[in-house]
Amino acid sequence: MRIFLLGFMGSGKSFSGKRLAEKFGMSFIDLDDYIEEQEGRTIREIFEQEGEPYFRKVEKECLHEMGEKNMTIISTGGGTPCFFDNMEWMNENGITVFLDTSVEILTNRLLDEMQKRPLLKGFSREGLKIFIKKKLEERNPFYHQTQILYHQKEEGQDVADELRKYFFRIM
Ligand code: S3P
Image (tube, rainbow, N blue to C red; front, side, top):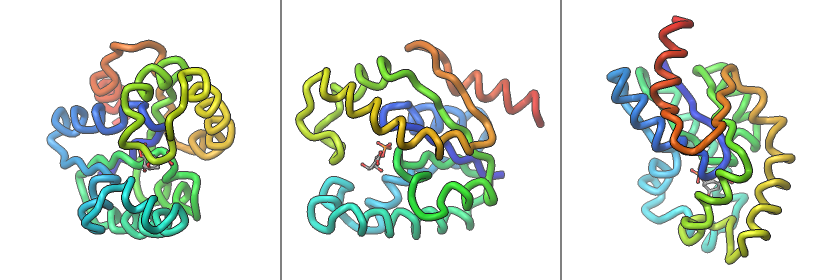
């Protein structure tokens, strides 16, 4: 079994993915961390030194390497499903879950974490909110191709536990 967690930056893919993997006794891979290991530099450095098209190419290659991993939960980057045929590939090679998170929650979380995210450069709170809204409009058609849609309504929800219960019900 292979589960891909999808969602916007700040939707908690890595946090919940790690916890879900522990509950299921599965391995966990964060695709961004995997890319950084392969490239020997941070995502921010890759964006700055090579530009986004290069990053997206490496991201696709690393994603395809996930096809060799079994019993693994993979948290993808916020943009992963929106480039090449990545979305289709993930649907064919695993179970895809979209962590649908409100603009309000995303804004609050991302305000504290702008430094390490190359796409979020020095936004004010209002600017960040507008950016998130616009990006979500572009990306939702991809995110909504996932097999499982999970609505994160409020902060403090135990996403991993709710997903665990959901998977037990369907399997
Ligand atoms: C990106 C999200 C990031 C990372 C890169 C680009 C995006 O991953 O892949 O900075 O396009 O939304 P997270 O969603 O894990 O922060």
